[in-house]
Length: 513
Image: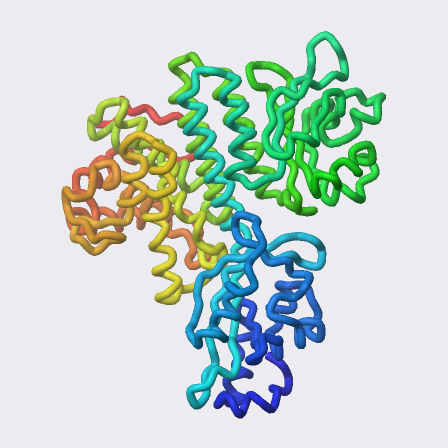
């Protein structure tokens, strides 16, 4: 870490060699060493990079630097007395897995999982070592997934268009913790007028006529008017310093609005805009914007099909597609993996003679079976080489996490169950519950085989692709032991019949012998 460890290290019983271990500076975690008063006395290079702050400014800083503005996941201030380092110093016990948001000097907010370890010498706490793991992507994805599932759950059951639009605004404020959300409708026959139709949060900020979508008026040059006029999402950071936001700058400051995003959409075929504001100056990352766009599309679809039988099926497919996209953005090496697993699972189910409704559900199950990986650090998912035992255990958690996510969405059987069981094996050697034989539901046994085949046929950070022949050999050689023998036979049959993963190829189930 530091070139010359402070003299007091010796009195803590820590040798210089420990403090100079190479792993500290090559680790993906930021390390910060504090004394008994909570002052920073050393840090590794990753901490300097992570917090975009020179070492000389970090060292000597307080427990929470004054510019860090630490917050809880719901956006409220992180109580100083509950800070993990402070707790370790007070209690002499380690604290793990505390998630906090920290503002970087650029104004951007990052999310860190903090673990602290008290340094005790001769029974006396001498300081604390803190590690910070960047979980920004995971926190933002989980946040957007939660909102998406909530909105989907409502719109798929709503029979009134207005209720869906109103619920969207309320959800973004109450569960999304945004300061204000409102929906504007471009008035037909009168160019430039935007009516405020639904709103939640700091609604006193709004007034009729405050925005338009006319490019000839100042009221139409802000994010809302531009989004409607150009049909493209507009993101504005730091509202107080944006020239085009000048007409609303003082009013935004009055209501503590720091940033905004405006998303055009067409509920019921009408030209509309979803405007979301936050008190933080840089609240809308690329991940947050994509998530809000997905949510707007979900509501747009739900409103358009409220009274049709296609609503449930279409909303389900839309939700599963959004979940799959969010999952695979996490790990670029597996882009398309879930879709291909779903396609192969469907073909196997057809060959097994399952009824069409179940075949469709098995396809959908395969397309989101890895959704739990959204909670796994991307450094682990894309790590080259072998995982450590701890990292492997963390990856295994994706089954239970995926089942929990999908269960919250009230999706039909067996979608959540497949996410939970697709790594179970016939002999009980799988995870997470060590199920055996018919304790594993048939859809999960089908997806398990398709998952292995697809994964082995494609490149991963920890190994090159091995090809179809070796992939098929793997499942046939372990049929009856790890994999369902009937499922394996059907898998071989569909490939013999000409099954291909390429999306341009058409698979004819009737060709299967």
